[in-house]
Length: 464
Ligand SMILES: Cc1cc2nc3c(=O)[nH]c(=O)nc-3n(C[C@H](O)[C@H](O)[C@H](O)COP(=O)(O)OP(=O)(O)OC[C@H]3O[C@@H](n4cnc5c(N)ncnc54)[C@H](O)[C@@H]3O)c2cc1C
Image (cartoon, rainbow, N blue to C red; front, side, top):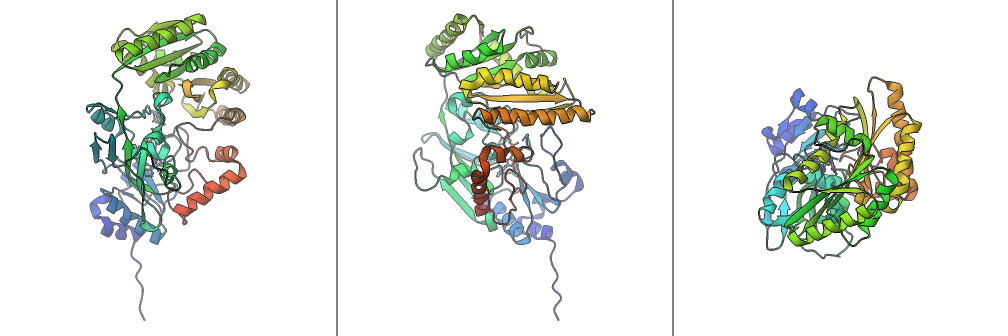
C-alpha cells in the first residue's frame, strides 16, 4: 500500500518561486493584513506574504494556488480605502507587487511598459523630464502604485480635463485562472478588435486576475499652469458657478470644492490663510501655454466676479503650490476633528450639484452629524466624510444610517456610489443598488469567466 504524503502548499510555493520570495513570519503576515481603510472591515491574517519579482513568478504562484484552492489577495501599496487589499481568509496568501518596479518608456511612441509595483509619482517625475505627461493624480500618488491605480481606476483633480487611469491604459498582461496569461491591447491609440478586455481589468480590484504589466499612454506635458481661489457665501451659487465655468468653453485642468467645515479643518491642521468665514471655496487650475493660461484664468475670473464671487489668482507657483498642498492635506486634517470617519466618494451629474449639495447638508442635520464635503466638483465627484466618535456606538450607527441616504441621494440623481475608491469590501451592498439584478448577474458572470474558483480577492466587489 502507498501512503500519499500531501506536501504543504506553502512549501510548494517556496519551491516554485524561491524561499526568499515567501514570508511566513507572523509580523509580516499581520502587517500585510491591513490597508488604509478607515473603518473596521472583516480581516484575516494570511498564511504567507509573497513577493514575486517577475511575471513568471506570478504565473508559478497562481498555478500552485489554483491547484491547491488557495485564495490570492493582490496588493500594491495598501493605500486603498475600501478594503481591496485586505485578506479575508486565513488560508489565503497576499501577493505584494513591491519588487516588480521596472518600466520602459518609448518617447517616440509616447507609451510606456510598466510593472505593477512602480510608484505613481516616480513614474510621473521620470516621464516629465522627457517632456511627457502621465496625468492620473490620486492624492496618494507619492506612495500608491501603478498596479493599484489600474486595479482601482484611480483618479484625482487633473482627471477632470485629462480623464482617469482608464484613459491611459492601452494594454494589460494579467495572470488569470490556473496561471494562464492573458495579454490584451497594444501600444496603439486605436484598436477596436473584439471586446475591450483591457478595460475589464481597469477597476477590477484584483478580482479577475493579477496584473503583471501594463502599456500606458503618455501625452505632451503642458508647459504652464495657473491657479485661482474663489470664495463663496452660499452653496447654491457654487453649483451654478461650476456649470457656468464648465459651459464657458474653458476646460480647467482642475476644479476642486472645499466646504466650510473642510476649510476650518485644514486651517487648524496646517494653516495657509484660507478664509474661515466662507461657506465654500473653489480651487481652479488651468493649464496650457503661458499666454493661454493667463487668458483662461482671466475669463474664469470675469465669470465668477459677474456672479458676485470674490476671486484671487495665485501670484506665482509658490502660492499655487501652497493652495494645492492645503487641498491635499484635507484627508489627514479630518483625523483631528473626530476619532472615526466614513469617507465616501459619490458622484453626481454636474447639472444636479446646485440641488444636491444642500441636500447633503440636510442629511447631516437629520442625523445630527458633522459632515465635511470636498472634492472634484468639476466632474461631480465629491468626498463626503461623516465624522463620529469611535467610542460612541450610537453615533457610529447614526453615521452608518446616514451613509445609506448619501448613496440613495447619489443614485436618485443618476450618479454613482464611487468615483475613485472602488467597491472593495465596504460598498458591496450598494453595488447591487447601482447595478440592479440583471447588471449584477453580468458582473458575476464576468468574474467567474476569469476566475471560476473564486480565488482572486474573494469577497470583494461582487459576491458570487
Ligand atoms: C491619503 C489617501 C488619499 C487618497 N486619494 C485618492 C485619490 O485622490 N483618488 C483615488 O482614486 N484614490 C485615492 N486613494 C485611494 C488609493 O490610494 C487608491 O485606490 C490607489 O489606487 C491604491 O493603490 P495601491 O497601490 O495602494 O493599491 P492597494 O491599496 O494595495 O490595492 C488596491 C486594489 O488593487 C488591487 N491590486 C493591487 N495591485 C494589483 C495587481 N498588480 N493586480 C491586480 N490587482 C491589484 C488590490 O487587490 C486592491 O483590490 C487615497 C488613499 C489615501 C490613503
